[in-house]
Image 1 (cartoon, rainbow, N blue to C red):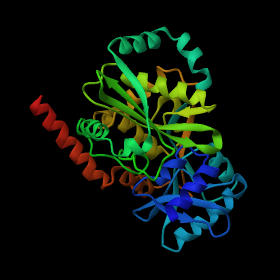
Image 2: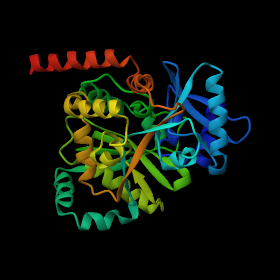
Image 3: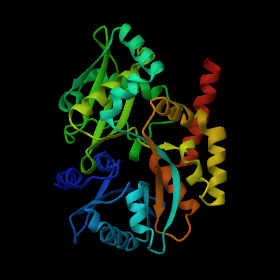
Image 4: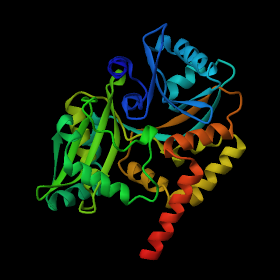
Length: 346
């Protein structure tokens, strides 16, 4: 029942790009007793980390935040809204006691302008053609069928094994196909009849939009397969009269450099260090380049908004633990060990 109610609220009021992700495994749900609203959250190191923002009507947002923060205080915790967007930042801007930091940016497209964008983008058009010439075709798969599809499980397993860090969670949960979330849209790329990659998108109902949550590919996928999946998704969303598509947060994106420059000094140093040294564990640079080459309409800043006067290292550590699923120091250690193993083997 709680999951069904959360889903109903998400499909009525979901505005933040991450709204549908509160239905993912591992997310707890808190429901407002005063307004129709829900917050999806996880608890780490004395912080309740909200997935994006509470899901509710705009006029209820401040009151729902206040009620949820009271719930957190009764448990000896404070709150951080992770991957929050401009609406929540604006609502809380005049309220004392909050700190706001910029995590990165998300690229946004209007799918109705996609065909015109492709027409004027010769290199992307050529890449799509080369991929089609290699006999890669994209098909739409029903979510119920996708949830139990062994080919997709195989691709996901191979894709995860090829990454230097253990599978991440919270707002980057990879195992998201299940029968409880039928509004997700799944595209599968096939070559010679075999599935080689797939894309999963979830609705942003209140904005007539979609978030591309996952792009997983196998080693058998030719270059350009990911772009071909995005192309198919954009065209499908344009047909359904959607007006917004995002591929989600790119942490540390250079597109957000101006806003990142306003972060606390210690956090700017940490982010600079991550840009220099963490790319071997998580491909920040590659993610940004992949999105940028498809010429998004704009890049929007994405925030962490904490109910504390000064954003603290403890809150950052809690965010890292939520995404890693394990203590961040352990995730980094596993990443280093995996990198060393790959160097020895390869």
